[in-house]
Image (cartoon, rainbow, N blue to C red; front, side, top):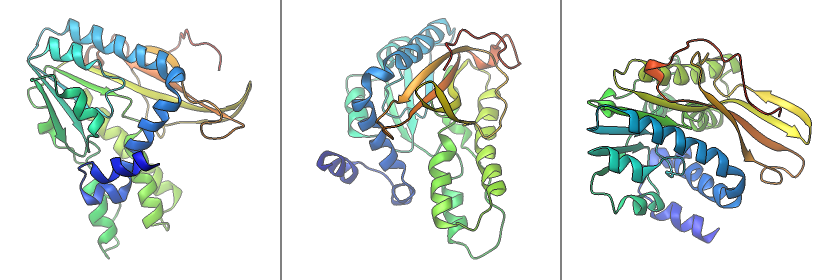
Amino acid sequence: MLAEWFTHLSTPCPQPYRRMGYLRELIAIERRHHRCRAAWASHLANCHKLITEAASSCTGKGKVVVLGSGLLLDIPLPHLAKEFDQVVLVDICHLGSTRRQTRDFKNVQLVEADISGVADPLERWLSSDDQQPLPVPVVDRNLVTDADYVVSSNLLAQLPLTLLGWLKKKSPSNNSESLQIFSRNIVDHHLSLLQSLDCPVTLITETLRLISNGEKTLNKIDPLFAAPLLYEGEEWWWDVAPRPEIDRDFDVRLQVRGIANLSNASHVRFCRNTTLAAP
């Protein structure tokens, strides 16, 4: 707990984002990885493999942009730094552990930005007395200007969650339908951004959240808020929180889809054939 407190105190992060819980969540992910390292290993290896192969096949080698770089657990940074002239890592803040990983690479740049495009508007909305509709995302497209390759890894389904938790806490009068629309808009906007790019794009995202008790499924959750992900790709299971990480009686597993090149995906329909083991 002392180490987490010091990290929270020493990490540069704007106060509004601290209040929303972004920094706290990033630190929590770091600690969870320490506890669940073995369970996460195959998922992270799959991410590295997919991104490495996609990066190697890119014809342009000028700049790669990683949206939601996080702790770099799923990002093959040495390979990207070797393949591209410039590596831009974008997230709302960067822990000291992330900064230390980048020190040996002269061509790596850290950028702090709100990838959801709605954190600041939501803060203003919550501070206003006007009964206006919930804000919609507006992402700074300059983040991906002149990119030869863009990566969005384990980000899409996470984008609404911190904001949704903050919104429920600060404005509990919002009904479930408005919260669903708010979250769906964030997911849709990020997908639209990725789909609009001219360069190769790799997308890795969870598509199903499964709560189970041994062999019995307790709950299935759509982490994309009913947004259709129409591109086929490689699929695997991620044991993100095996018991007793969250609860001694149940496990949390994620179904993950990795699309090597979103802009040139050969199919635009839901996956029909799957090699996934039964949950």
